[in-house]
Every structure is written in structure tokens, then in C-alpha cells.
Image (cartoon, rainbow, N blue to C red; front, side):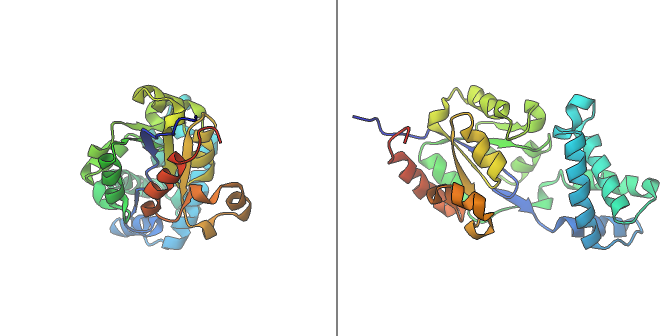
Amino acid sequence: MAHRLQIRLLTWDVKDTLLKLRHPLGEEYATKARAHGLEVEPSALEQGFRQAYRVQSHRFPNYGLSHGLTSRQWWLDVVLQTFHLAGVQDAQAVAPIAEQLYEDFSRPCTWQVLDGAEDTLRECRTRGLRLAVISNFDRRLEGILGGLGLREHFDFVLTSEAAGWPKPDPHIFQEALRLAHMEPVVTAHVGDNYLCDYQGPRAVGMHSFLVVDPQALDPVVRDSVPKEHILPSLAHLLPALDCLEGSTPGL
């Protein structure tokens, strides 16, 4: 007779799973620029940021730690390049804005807890589940979670900066399992990114769920993920866990 699967540990992505920015990034950047006497369109900053972040992540993965950068310097460079791409060529004028933005994004008030997140975390703990964070974030995350009242829900917070590997690298999931003294078969990960939060944990034998509007997924991705693994909201998590635990391990 097959043993009933019981999930004992839930690991969590943070950005756009539990938290989001209180205001759109382009608006945040434009507001700080205006306070320093620069007028830049939020849409240009939003577009510039996407390009700068993509290039920086490719050139210097995981905050450039293996290249001798600090996460702070990595982010300051992203902001400088963002403004450059938005048409601001004076790096000296942007430098204090970059410093201010780095500090602002460290503050809990810049972020907001997504609807249902705190209730879901509390219900998970009531159910006896252990909780932890696995996030491609930097050292500021602990303070942000603490300031928003979420840190107390987690046994530990493992960032890619601390681990030395970003999701979906298997090493960061293996390090979380080591810290928790858990086997992958009794662990599930929850997040919003297909590669980092769905495929990544499954590569080391964990279970995983995607918190995302199914219609927002690429059709190829949507068709490759069992519908019971796609959660339109966090309210769907515990019923999905019940379904998973009602299945036969290994199937």
C-alpha cells in the first residue's frame, strides 16, 4: 500500500508572489529624479530599466559577486544605465539619485504585501507547515520582510546573494533543503516564474506551484504545466496542497 504524501516544508519566492512595489518602478525613478531637478518620463525610465537590468544580469549574474562587485554597486550601475538609456547623459547628476533609490528600495514602505499573502502564510503555519524563502534578492530582503511583518513566518530567508547562486540553479534549492534538513519529496516551492520557481525546484526533486493568471502564461508553458499546479491566487494554494497530498508519491 502506497504511503500518503505529506508536504512538510513550503519555500517561497517573494517579489510578485508575496510582495510588489507600491508604485510602478518608472514612477518611483521619475519622482526621485524630479526631487533632484531632473524631468524624465516614467515610461522612458521603465523601458530603460528593463533593458539595463537585462544587460547587467547577463554580464554580471547574481549581482556580480563572482566579478568582485557588491550588490549595492551592481544596483547603482543599473540605475545609472537606466537614466542613460532614458536620455540623461550626466552621470554625475544621476549618482545621488541612484544612492537615494537604493536606500528607498530598502525601505518596507516602498513595498506592499499582496492580497491574501499574510492570511495564506498564517494558514500554512497553522496547518503545521514549515516555511522558508528562496529569492533572487539581495541583502535588503530580511529588513523589508521584517518591516512588513512577514519575517516571523519563515524559518529562514535564503537570498541568491547569500547562497551564491540564483534560481533556477539547483544549488540554491539544495542549500535550502540542507538548511531545513528536509528531503525534496516533502518540500514544495511557490512562485510566479516558470523557469525559476516551477522548473528549478523540480530539477532537484521538489514539488512546485505557479502563482499566476493562467491566461497570462505563454500557451506553450501553460500546456506543459498541469492545471492543478497553476494557482490563479494564493487562496488556491491549500486546496492544491490537499490535491497533491492526496496523490500517490512518484505519480
